[in-house]
Image (cartoon, rainbow, N blue to C red):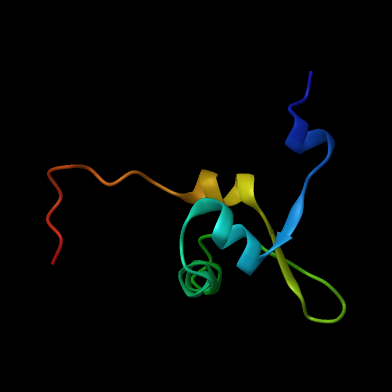
Length: 68
């Protein structure tokens, strides 16, 4: 059985997706522009994303990594 996202993919605005996952929309736009997160563009240039694809692109930070 397919999961719900495969059966009924939900596209949301960048602003809404950022709110759902708890980041700023600017951060999400940067990830999209860097090619890290797929997006879908409507005819009127509105960009939409799947929250599941954003979560898949996110990687946990290792505790021992230094932050310069």
